[in-house]
Length: 510
RNA sequence: GGCUCCGUAGCUCAAUUGGCAGAGCAGUUGACUCUUAAUCAAUUGGUUGCAGGUUCGAGUCCUGCCGGGGUCACCA
Picture 1 (tube, chains in turn yellow, green):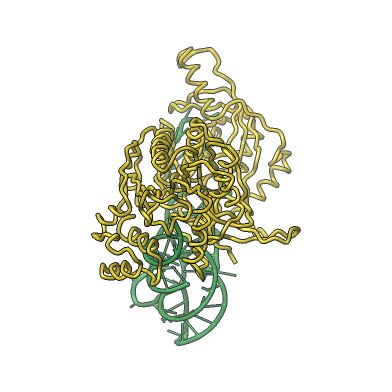
Picture 2: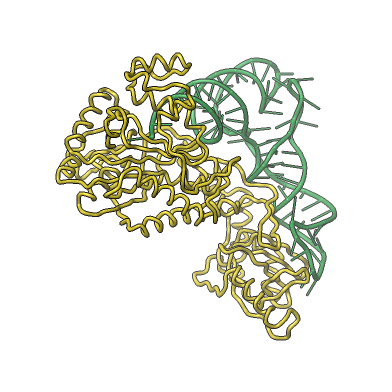
């Protein structure tokens, strides 16, 4: 239940006073002929055509927006209103507006944060700012709660300098609308986010991929190692999982005859929250027939370079203290070489888990006891290599026992054709030459069940229907998955995933 | 989940060893017909996250809880 504070109480009373004077604080009908930027452009064009002192009347406009600055003087006032395009100044003079309306402004019945509609001829003030000489002024939405206040200055090129800030992280995330309304730079992050997703789509569409949608509610989860969220369908009396990946549903479509499919959508993983993990996040997965993980690496490089260029105008992107370069030709380093290089240990000298674990302890790291060989290799990688991979890098050829959907590397029983790519010390994506032998796939499911018996977190449920699909024949294909949010972090120079999510997950307030 | 730091006015922040809770901005009132981080004068505003405890006295010290940041763990 809303308990108006003092400032809100004042605004409520203003709304009532306006209503008493016959002003509707929330009218149904609104008009706008120009955005703020269109209006400015229209005046500049007028000046260019007729000169600054011309007797030809300037264009008449109707603009709408939120009041961001008010400067009331005795008989002339100024406001800046803001719409999505930017800001424009209103020049309000009692002569044009009449006493009644001007008095409402002077009595500050109109507040910063209110939405208004203003009509009039465009002009330039003596100080040189393009403004609307307002002859009709209407409140179109009263703001009852003041937005967090920070002082801002609009420079001539339109940039907004902020003095002070609205920085309380918790409030910013919980009340993102206020964050967006006040903090100008936050809005641009989400514009770039949209541009990023659009660029990914355009890239894949142009390559001939078909965008599809697969179930989020799944009777069986799979395709990744993660704990799922569970839910329940009341009518069907059915336990359901929120998907942790799209993998198995997408590959079934290759059986159905599509050569190349992709999906961009939400995944849900019931795991820890961190600067790069949110319980729900946006994933891109694609699968392409008649290629393998080498082909997928080429697509990956091209795609990321394309996105960087579309969003930031260059394959080079500033991220924190680094300049990342997505230009294709990223290094491809095997998992084995990477660990040899950064950890000074060759895990192939220790082909069984017990020996490897002991060798790792001698190196001074402490994996959980009793893990599989592949898990140990992965631990080594995380401990010694991951953070060091700043420029885009493919790490290729992963241990088999942590990769149940990838084809083995020729004549190598320990490795599969899989790569992950890393940027800024973060895992960005994961891909393999997809396993398409149903007999091998079934064995992998069984092996996983055996390896991770009693280990709920890493168990991979056996998906009979997926095997059935594969038995009809699945073309050889390469598959790919990438966290879109992390990509957006890179494109927008944000340190945490929460700053690229409009509504990051927050604990419930009790 | 562990460790650690933090929570004071609408926003950003002060408050000495435990000693009257403050400032700037915004808000309110007034002046001002080209201002723009407007200016000038006056002025309001607090359950110091919540609940206990120690003390003559707690924003400050202690315990618990709530929320958040960082970090570790978890996480292909």
